[in-house]
Image (cartoon, rainbow, N blue to C red; front, side, top):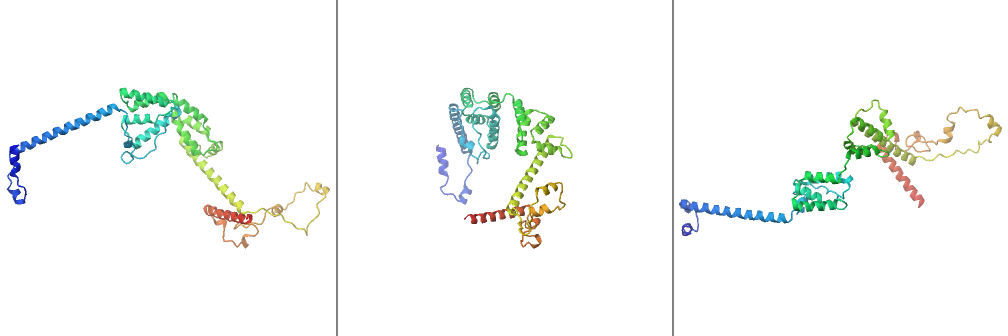
Length: 353
């Protein structure tokens, strides 16, 4: 200590460039003392780290299932924001869905630890037969430690999984029918089952055809070349179904437009040229006679309609409207029809008022 004080007293209180240049280099004794101080500090630091590690291990042994929930749910530090799994009650029909939701959650939240995966899965098992099973697993893990994720999944499948997934999938596929649903919905349900059935390609094509709407199946059979693969069957079914539904929507739209712009025919009354009704004897004699005037029925039934604006009462040559329906595309015709319907509704409201 006396040598250290002498060294400190030898250092001037104020240092200038000239004084620094005049300082003498430290001797070997001073260097050895500094090195010994560094070693002592490193020893103290390692001792503190070991004590801290022991305290953490003691706390973890007392609460083996403590989960840092904020860290796992912090979207800024751990992955992206994904939906949490639904609570599982032990239903076998929901077992595969629950495992799929867990896998998506683990991947999105960057959960890689086996302990965290098992603990999170147990936290979402509530009610039904899953709740008591989860409690037993917690007691077991408290004594023996948490098992790895693959072992947990195997035990979960053995307890809650379907014992015969292929048979269940085949039964569901036999009951699957398109009905009035779209081909996209039918294909989505079919693809969900096809892998579990373990059918070959020929059997899958047969089952797909059986579940199709009969009208749609007839359209596929009317193609110049029949599809030979399951993908081609699915592609043609979706394509033809979409075309048919688009056509039905267009027909409905055009029907509404015709109803809004056309008026009912008015009967023609001509009192000056009225003729007496024929007698029953004359009508009986003329039953076998067919008139050759083809336009006679058209003149008495159909009103005079403009082929330009589709309104009755005048011809296209005398039409004063600036609207030409024949030159409109589908979108323009749709907009015009909506405008006409709105005008008709406003006129109806004014009359009612």
